[in-house]
Length: 552
Image (cartoon, rainbow, N blue to C red; front, side, top):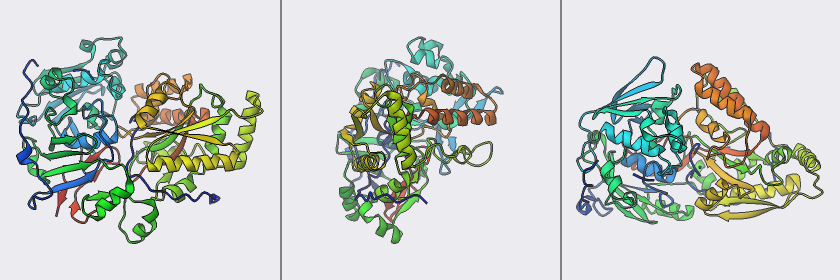
């Protein structure tokens, strides 16, 4: 049993996992005229309409973007996942199933995929959704002018990485619409996870004429077209987003809700009060009420995926020394963090890849790989002393810990600050930053020790660990290891899945031998939900899905 720390912080828990770039997690644009906006005010259900089924949710914040390759985080993708739809969609069992594509064929070598679109699929303005829309969208994802943080996902396509890096041409990317209903793609390497991956919003189609006519099309409800279960009708920035059922959706008969309103309330206590007042149908769990709410069986705890962690900048002192990095990581009592600070039954993270992915060796990838970090204050002090000796320090240089705004992030940072002081005798300064600014500063390697989170884009461990390759935009630590890079490259090119997993285990082990990150905890989904609501699917390896949701 872990020693109980004296840290007993009172916390209010934020109800979301905001990815500072997903995969990890942490644009530019037929010759047709873009459709004229329609007057949707008459079809927007309101809370006063007693006959409408209007689901009321909290998105916490303004979406980063509702342009699929740009809004690469949960606050954007939870909304996009219900407005739009890719070739596949994650089903209720979290496995990909046919969506815009009715079927697909895979070549014997696993490197050519042919998607066949279903008949009658339309955009919300009535235009057909075509294979050309997908070709345009997927190449746009890769286009350097788009500057998509998700572009690296498209490197799976032959020619994709070169185009994405500005060294190749769009016409050399092996994504081709053979006709209006057939899309053929050739891969750079076998990717058994591709069918799952293309359910990700980054791979959603976009309406070419709209994108090319108006560079700001994704910022206004009047110019955004949908091909999914719902369509956008109103977007009051920094306040709320309203959607109604999309009558042109191919499976509209199975969509039960009339509409959804997403509020933007970035305060857990306000959110909970609105839930109590029936102004929201779901809420997070305030930490100061967690014990009672759990005792009253009011809380739902669902499996999720993703990891909260801190990045060390290995290019800045004192974290250019591996033993000092390991000392700080070992000084973190993760069990205390989840038990007494977070208080909603997350699992402490002693590695990076979260549980939930089957390993060909048997069991779960996390179970097979085991732990790579631990809490040991005495050993942490020894490592710190060793690192300081190696650096010639008589006194440790000043350390500033940067974290993004939000109640949970702040309380976790306060807990870490206290642990560093108690367990290794280091006083750490605190720096709160807006999340976009923090990410930008991380990318420029301006921060010493900074908060991050990762939500997987598809259900394979490679999605977690490939982001730490040399030069990868998701790395943001300055760390580089040739052995690690080769292991990732070999894993990508290994057709034998068992051997591929062995390579990924070795890569994760190598990551922790150099310790450019300190994992904190694995995410779960913990929430309160009205008895009137049923059918919301919260995917462990994807985004919230309201296609099957209903209100009694």
